[in-house]
Every structure is written in structure tokens, then in C-alpha cells.
Length: 593
Image (cartoon, rainbow, N blue to C red; front, side, top):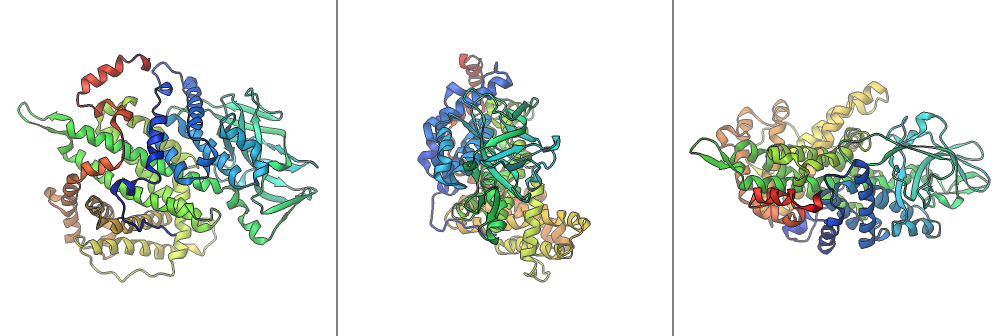
């Protein structure tokens, strides 16, 4: 896998932000529009409808097609929606990424234009239908069929397990949908999964002939109008086939341009999923940064009485300070890593294995840590963290939805780790030798040695096609995915540490935390001894990791400023200098009721 850092010198804010500052600022203003604020009286259905109104307003302000095909803008839309308008995330994923992105890139402009025109102004809302009851997110095994009827295609659901499960199409508004189905050509040959475009609901919101839509139950963590969809001879036009110019159809018989086209077909069909995986990873990183910003700013001003005569700031309590600053180091490391993958993706072939696996690795590395960070921030804020007004609690739903949106992140992590093991198996690990964790160079060598050793230990399972071997390698594959990404993230931090003392400080915390977590592994592999492990750990708060956390604390104001958040736009009461007054104002605000 390849990740590229920024070679030119940039400000700290530019390093942590991906894309144009003015566009990021515009998004904050648009998404903070009070006309779409969630109120206490809104039912779940009203919140769904409010989200659709907000989507239309967002489209009016920034458009659709230009954003869908401009990855820095697309990632920014995901990031700020997650931070400021969590109910929007399911809608922008379908509208901007999966539907508009697929139509803009996988078919010719004349065929796509009628659909893109409606998506451009949100006359219709876009969504993609892939997952089914039976195959889940393993969409190569989907059972929905598309057959040729002489003029176009006919889509059918052959049995109940082939029903499309989860797409957000419950609200009755006009829909342009990209649908995955197995194309059974006129010769009866199963040509695998292809994409087709259909207007699933008309201008009145009524289902198209041949479409049955059943809205699913209440979801407690995220607002989505999830549905089950089945097809009974749904007709779609010939031009609605998103072939990516890999094949032709003549009298219903599909002919691939060449063998390479056949091999690229499935990766082509799911190419926007690759973009979406990274977009969702990016927005989870954004919720982690926002959570830390809010929690750390609150902790710095919250006075905690410990005895009748002694008090301290919450930030100075060890379990608060150490947890949140360690989370901060991991989050910024993953932000820099994720931004490098975004830059790589902008010029990459989305059907190439290296591209797909790079994004799978990033998703696994970023998303679980984001959930841990948001959870830690909510818990450290205690009662204040329970309320939507302080933002952090609502981020939990976004994290859970993204992490489980394709089964769970461990599925992608294990697949990517297995591919990575095959690529690294020819590079032997260094001979065991003791390292000094006080030496930054040795820290990097420790992380590299762990990556290569895990790959070598996985080798006996790689050549065995038996199911038992494929299952046994999963723990090693997941360990390898995490180890490799951590190593790459540290390399990227090293590139910027010279110019940014803040990055140098969090780099040390990140590296030492990685070593500390895996200290038993390093001991058993002869890379650290007991003395080195003790040196890393925070014994009497004087170990290497404790010293690194203290140093990072000194750089905290600059790091939080570089996140680019606006206290007024966030509107969290805990950010106020006068907490009681902030809550009083909010509770009596007529717009909130």
C-alpha cells in the first residue's frame, strides 16, 4: 500500500485539514442554519423529514455533481455534517457519494444527464441499493437479478433473502437509485454484479411499478428511514446500465471488451464504495476531533472539589488528562494518515487492488479508534456528556452506523490484512535485538519489526485454501492491519515533526502508547526487556509516556486551535465561561421547543 504525506511545508491547520479553507468555512455556516435545528418536540419521523429539508438546503448552497466528483469537497461535506448535523450523514452518503458519484463516473454523460439533473438540485434524492438479507454486505453474492427483455432490463427479487435490506428510502420523496443486481444475459450466463439506475419513487413519492418498499423499525442511535425493498419486474432503460465502458450488450448478450475488463467489473461497480469508506472514516475522525475539543476545553475550566479546602481543574486529574491526551495523539495521527490516503485516492485507479486495500486499512485503523475517543470524551464529561446540546453523545450514533454499515470493520480489516501479509511475506523481519524506547529511531524500528514479524507468522496460513486456515489467519490479519497502519502513521508524523513541535509532541505519545499497549508482545519477541517496558510505563508518573503526555499538554492550545472549530457554531454549553447561564439560555430558547 502507498500513502503519501505532504512534501511542502504547511501550517498546522493546513496539515490537519484536507481541502480548501473557504469551503470548510462555508459548510460550517450552511450546516449551522438554525432553521434545521433538531428540537425537543420532534418525533423520529419529523427528524427524518427535517434531514431531507436540510439536504435540499445544502444542495441549494453547494450543488451536487461538482461536490460528488471533487473528493476534497466531498470529504469536507462528510466531516462537517458529522460534526454539526449528524442526521444528514445517511442522506449525503447516498445522495452525494453512492448515487451521484456512480452516475458521474460509471456511465456516459448523455445517459447520466437526466438523473444527474434531478440530483443536482435535489428534485430527487439519490441512494444505492446493494445489501440484501442473505448476503449482507458481501455483495458479490447478491441474488437480485437483472434480465434482458429485448429493449431494456427487468429487475426481480427471486426469493425473500434477496430483498434489499437497509437503504434509506422510507420517506416518500422522489428517488434516483443505483441498484446492484446479477445480470443474467440472454444466453442464460450469470455475468456477475452490475449497477442499474432506476427512479424508485416518482415525483409524488409513490413507489415505481414493480417496487415494494417497507420501512423498518425505530433506530435508537441514528436517524435513518431504513427500508426493505423488493422488485417484481421493475423495468429500467437500456441506458440505465452503468457499464463503465467495460462491456457491450447486443441482443441481450454481454461481451467484455477484454479479459481485463471482466476482472475489473466488480471493482468498478463498487468503486464509489471505496470512496465512501474513506469519507465515513474521515467524518468519524472529525467527530473524534470535535469530541476532544469539547471535552478538553471543558476539562480545562471545570473546577473539581476534592476536599473541603482543595480543588483542581478536571484536566489535571490523571485519568482524565492521560486518557484524553492519549486519544488526542491517536486521533491526530489518524487524521494525518487519513489525509495522506485521501490525497493518494484523488489520483488513484479506484478499481486497483492497492487502492481498495489502502482504503480498507484506513477504515479499520481509523473508525474503531474514533468510537473509543468519542466514548472516552463522553464519559469524562460525565453528566454533561449525556446531552445532545454538548454534541458528543450524538456522535456515538454516527460512529456505530459507520462501523457496522458494511457488517463490521473487522471484516474489511481481516481481508486487507490478509492481502498485506501476502505482499510483505518476502520481506523478512530483523533479527531480535533489544531496543531503547527513549530513542525515537528505535521506536520506529520497533513498530516496523512488529509489522514484518506478524506478516511472517501469518505465512503458514496463506497458502492453505481450507476454510479452517482462512479462519485461523483472521487474528493475525487484524493485528497486521493495525500494526502496519500505526507504522505508516508514525512515519508521516516524523515527516512533519521538525516543522511542528506540536506534531513532535503527539508523535512521542502516539509511539510510546503503541509500544506500551503491545509491551508483552515486544517482550516475548526479544525486542524489549523488562527495564525498557518499565521505562515506558507511567510508574509514579515519571516514565517516558508520562513525560511525553506532559509535553503534549504544553502544546494543547495550539493543537485545539488548529482543529478549526467555532465555539459559537458548535453551541455546546460546556464551552461557555458561564455554564449555568449557557444552560439557562438554551432551556429558554423558543427555537429549541
